[in-house]
Image (cartoon, rainbow, N blue to C red; front, side, top):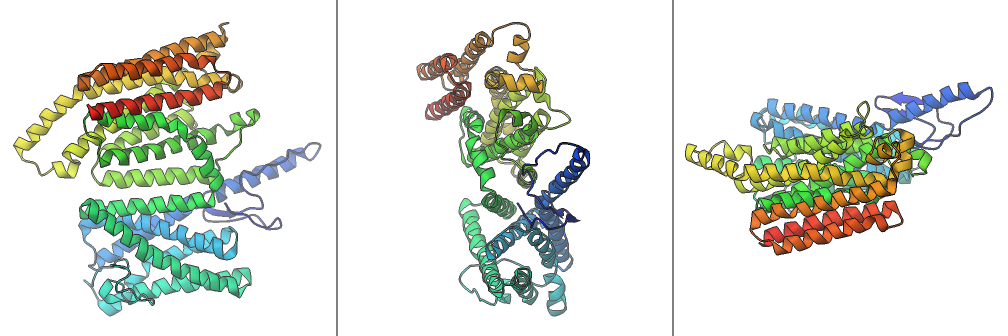
Length: 551
């Protein structure tokens, strides 16, 4: 987040606004005759703060535009094939967005603080990315050697960067030095301290070496060992650039990361459901673990959606707000970028996660906010669980048969074999997804017991608020809901028995989980009971997945 002096005026440039108050900071409500005018001024400050919080979108949008322009230049000059456009846009977007955050980190360390001018400077600096092809055209002409990172780092590395043999021509080297020297000079001018400018120049040089050399070399070695195709390797590197962006953002907002980690237990059941779905298909491979990682990210995004739009309802309960609007924008941009890159590979897994994204939006976000309407709130919880199981099943199928591009070149006989395989797993998959949906709907109802009073004040319709309005005792209702949830956890075991032919181990695990859930109403603290419920569900599903794989 960015801060300014208390005397700084309110101005806005593009996506970035300079305000005199940190977004999300507390504001004291005035009273008396001046209340209305000050309230209006406070509203303007809040509006400006929200505009300032869009800075991740500003950087992302600039990175996308510059990436597309740079790709078009390379294609027109004959250094890039037209068939590489899709993967190339992904890589350029990821690279320029990561470069923006790396230079923001340089400015933060060199100046000792976050300031709005740093974001504007980086936005302008990104446009230098379109410069190298224009500088190299008079020298190399058309159809010159394609651009690359510092290949085979550190072999052949030159501290002045210019090295045509390593695909770093003069235009690229000049642009890199313009970026480095520009950061140092502007830092010295803005801070009025030459030593800070020198520090910024040194850090910018190191950042370029690390970004263009070390980081790219590690990714290249990794993609080679994974045996990825050229397009898949390009998309993989693009995804890791986005993850680098997220890591740098978390370093700027440690309170936000800590808030997510504290609530990450909510994602455990869905992660376990992914693994169980893959296990039921007999294929827990690398693709499954990629799906698990994306499920964690999707769980974090759902928490951000929920907690941001619940901030007004949570305030009377004394809950600490940890999500700012920039966090909200950042998580959505990261998720959408990674899902888009994944879809370019030809996988259908991103479309399963699009269902999860839509579920999260209509559950938490205006104008839908279906979390307040019964039974739609429980149905959406069920859709989330069903999608998690489906994601695990699809991951196992794609690990076994490949993604769409790999299927396109099959012969008629091989294609018929795949159709037979589809028919073989379709029925068990349908049963598993349907069971997950119905079970999740019931189990999800238990989480509302801890929020009865808050839900009543906010007008949220749950099993508890609706039954209490009709005179039922909430504790008695909770015991009944927990028993129904226990039956759902026990009913998971027949699926595993069907897939493996084994009975006793699965019955033991299911009975143990169901027994623990039946005992949860005896716990004094409803919030602690819910945390234990999440643990029980996650452990049961993980244990069942392990038993299925071992069978």
